[in-house]
Every structure is written in C-alpha cells, then in structure tokens.
Amino acid sequence: MTQHSTAGTVFESQKFMDFPSMKEALIARKIDAGFLNMPLAMKMAIDGQPIKIVYLGHRDGSAIIVPVDSPAKTFKDLQGKIVAIPGRFSNQNILMRRMMKENGMAEGDITLKELPPPEHPSALAAKAIDAYIIGEPHAAKAEIDGTGRTLFQCGDLWPGFISCGLVVRQEVIDQRRELVDELVRGIATSGKWLDQDTATGAQHRKDAALVVGKMFYNQKPELLEYVLTKDVTRVKYSDLKPPKERFDEMMTLGVEMGLYPKFLPFEAYCDTSFAPDLETIVPKFDRLPGVDEVAKQ
Image 1 (cartoon, one colour):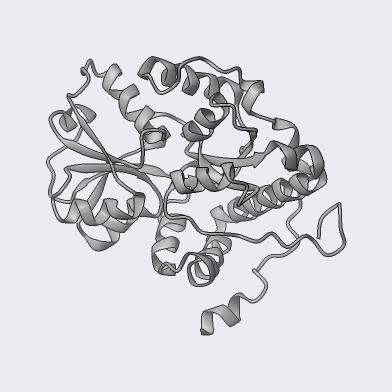
Image 2 (image 1 turned 90 degrees about the vertical axis):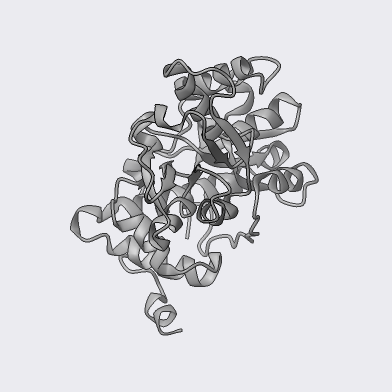
C-alpha cells in the first residue's frame, strides 16, 4: 500500500547478469528503470540518453578480495597484480584509479581486467587473477568458499561508497510521476526496514536473505545472510538520496580518467525530488509476510 493506491502497484522485475545488458535494455525501452552502476548511468546521460538517477540502491557493499593466503596488507601490495573490475564504467574502477593516484602509482602499475561480476570468485580460485573488487554478494562468495579474504571494504577507502542506483527513463518521470514516487518510496521503506533492527539481532536482514535468495536471486540464503549480518555495517540501506558533492567528485574523476568527454552538471542527470524524508516512513510489518512458508520450501 502506498499514498497513491490502496493496494500498491505490482512492479515486474527482470534479472540481468551484467550492467551493459541492462543499459541496452533501458535504451531500447525494454525496461523503464533499473539498478545500474552509477558511472555507467552518467555515461548514458552524457551520450544524450533520456534518463535520470533518482535514488541509490545502498551504501558501501563492495570490497577488494585477495587469495586467502595472500600476504597483501596494503593497497600498494597490489602493484604488479591483475585485479578484476566489473566494468570500465564502474565506481569500483574509479576507486581503484583514485587509490592508485593517492599511492603514487602510474597507469599500468595495476592491471585492471574487466570481468562479469559472477565470474570474479571463480577466476580468483583458478588463479586467473590476483584480486578482485566487486559488490556483494560476489565479494563474500570467496570468503564463504575459503578461497579469498577481504583486503579492504570499499567504504574504508572511500567512506559512504556508492556503487549502484535507481535509473529511470525520463518519459516515465514526466508521464507517470506518481509511479516513480511509489517505487522510490517503496525502496526507501525496504531500506529503513532492513536497517531497523541491526542492533537487536538483524532478524529483518535474515528474513530478507531467505526470501530474496530463494524467490528472486536463485542464490543460497546462507550467502546473503552472511553478507547482511556478519557485519551489519558491510552494506547500508539508509541515506540513499543521491549526494551532489560525491557525484560531482565521481564525474570529475571520470573526466580525468578519460571515461567522459566532458563534465555534466549534477542536475542534468540526477533528480533528487523523489527521495523521501525517512522520518515520514514507517514500515508496515515486522516479519516479512510469508517468510515462514518460504523457509519450508
């Protein structure tokens, strides 16, 4: 239920295995919105695609993973290594180059290799790469399998790290504003619910891991629960209004790296008017409806 309806709108979801495919689906109008890597969304806007970033998916939730027996302790220890990134237009790529600059490294001191996110853990296990930087749950997968360990959480290197966000086609914003508002408010409510009981056992996150793992992601709930509860600060679902200062920094770094031909003003590709005041949001339930039935499946 939302402020715009008594029953709530059913949004049809579609799973993508990589961000470029999602980008093409947005361009072709096969989907109206998607959780896209932010630098890729910026590139779409610079290329003239009619889209806007309206909300974030989460904060932090990415990590640099090295082999479990790696002696690496510092970022400089990655020099001369092959590190997988999810794509050229990813904030993981920008973070790596930002850190290389901070550590006085030149282009090529670390070889950055593009790989689809699901392939990162297996590539590390096969020793095809020396490390990888990726969003969850692909970071934790190597930890669970015993083949990798976390060198850094990205939030430790770049506080409040931003990876993906909700991108919506402009005509949907113009023609169905109430629908976008309902979608964003629903995401914000879910985020507040996930973070609501982290100090008292994080049962909400455990329920979410079970339902999402079995019904949507086709992933082991145990992996998702590990990500969400082993350290509840590993991924955060509050404070998701797109921040101008951080996005300007990302855009500036992208121009310096040669990702973008020009600097695009924040207002040209972001619309923060949908971001709700979290004080006005009250989750409607404690336990997820149907979670006990899902557990029996």
